[in-house]
Image 1 (cartoon, rainbow, N blue to C red):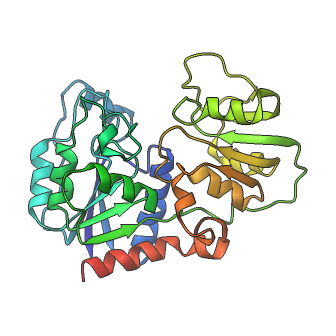
Image 2 (image 1 turned 120 degrees about the vertical axis):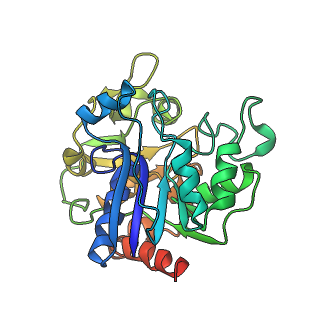
Length: 307
């Protein structure tokens, strides 16, 4: 198949958890013989500067492709220029689009504080963009059953008939138990913020037990042993030093990649029911052989949806 992969940020330039998952899927899809053409609105720094100042606003997409993946279209909401609405409309009009939502950007501008309970939506919340996507898409792709359940509950249209789960796609040759000394009591890796559960961690474990690594997005001081942001290449060794890995977010974490990585590294994992991976069977996020097959499971389902 010839597939146009349309995203706001380039998954091979940006390094968030969603982008890492997309890389694994695209790499495996190409290995299976698919021609996957990236159409990303934001790429490297020189191109981003042109976008910022409105000197380059178009986004070429080959509408003759066999399939399209529309992913995280409203990402980076503070950036001043957006994917032209005409491009999104043209892709949806083909009847061959798959909507791949890895967070909540295309569904809720507030990151779904209602937790999927529509009666608790904020007064300013509206889902017209999402309704347009899901009502016209051939396929919907989700990071977890928990995310699928929440999106289905808040949008105003039924989900497409074809629904695919993008299970944790992690490099099990990098994330494994190295047999190191476990000299860290409780570890958290990720963006440090209220939404990501910083205050829940402090309340549950106390600052003295915590080691925290990740970008500081907290409005206030960070207690505990704060290591700052660390390179992704250093994460496996850090996780191998921890006895317990904890993730207790306030929001619904659509996937929660780090708990799966930590489990592979031999940590005891403490989560709440707002972490998407917790809604999968345990082997889907803890068993190396099952995780190794995740990209192929995705493409098996994708190919069947377009057969």
